[in-house]
Image (cartoon, rainbow, N blue to C red; front, side, top):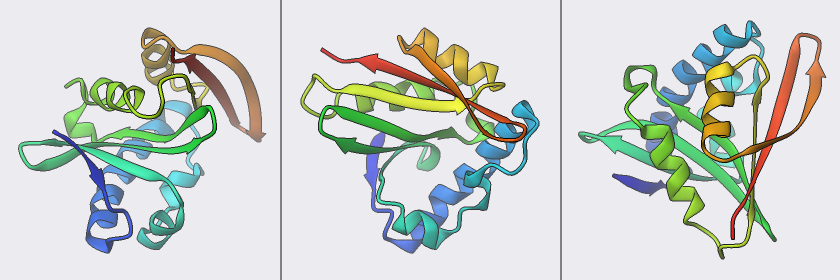
Length: 151
């Protein structure tokens, strides 16, 4: 079941963080870069980020989370994370499909991930996203950007 998460509620923010930290730790290992910002987030940082959060619950437990910001014509996916114990259960795909159903129907979805995160890159390409560029954020960290048109 997917439902909106009230990130301003500290209990829910803690629950999101309990998915985010292990999920991004796996990404850090994949890209061999351990200074990624999501690993430094705190409950209060999540509560102030201005993103809308949605969670996928598996048997009452939060298994995955997606967060977005919607602007005119754009749905910006800021986070898509699955707790490692729930990998390969289709949670990321369900969350992405849910977000694709949001908005007015003609927005462009955008997302980015570490360029060495081959599972995420494969996932986005398989989901119809097209690579739009690569950017060096800092020494040792390249980010690949994607977009997908919704009609």
